[in-house]
Length: 313
Image 1 (cartoon, one colour):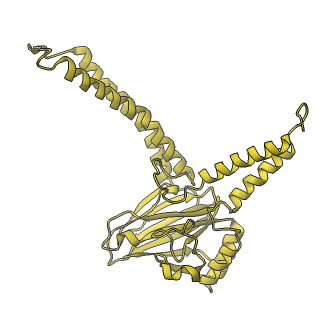
Image 2 (cartoon, helix red, strand yellow; image 1 turned 90 degrees about the vertical axis):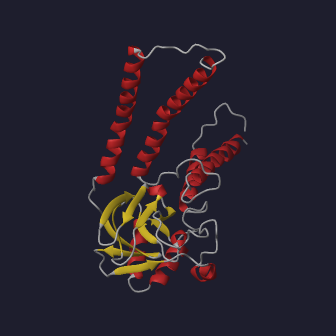
Image 3 (cartoon, helix red, strand yellow; image 1 turned 60 degrees about the vertical axis):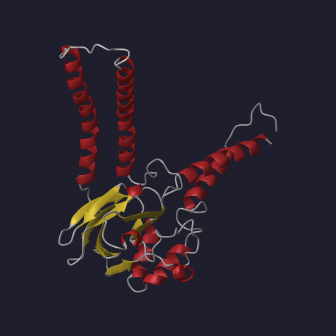
């Protein structure tokens, strides 16, 4: 009996943990940044929480000063205004305090910026080209050329694409062809826009990426996805009337599935996606995917190894 209770408790904890890690798309009433899926996003989330330790006290301190000024120095309580024009201690304090705060914020900020801009050795190079209003992806260095367009998924095409589950393929975010990348591999991403187009921006919140796609200019960034799943972003530069209908979707899969998809995509792109989706028990990022199953399996293993000495069965 006790082992069953332990199994139930451990499974619930693991499932809750798995659900919390599935922030691969915007959630209702979401107040924090999306869950990190790359090392850079881990740093961004840490830095955002770190700066709150400065922002909140400063805001409360300024609010307290305003209340004090309003209460103590109102006309009825202080009819004769003070003639004091200088206070050396206050002037030194309000000069040094911002310097110290800015210095404390600048050091980790520069470290984060350096990690974003310093390009590590890449395992894979992709090129994303933006046009009004879709993305084109090219896989550099593949044995056979792989390039395709990625459009917003229309409701009429959901059934044919096998993407009828709106929780995994949400409206206005799901696409017909996702960018597919292997897990735990460094991906170098080249971003540009068509020569006769406008400025766009490639933004993937869970990856900590937001970089402009400028006509005639090739910008680069990088990411290393740590979790399998299907992640969503959007063009984040006002690019015209259909700006809201230009989503970005990145599917992170194990390396063996990625290689199988890449080889098939060179000759049969729709078939490659169907094979990739069918190879998982559920849509990437869903509770039935391998991440959640792995945590439940781990819970079962932990339960079997729990000692029962001194516990009633």
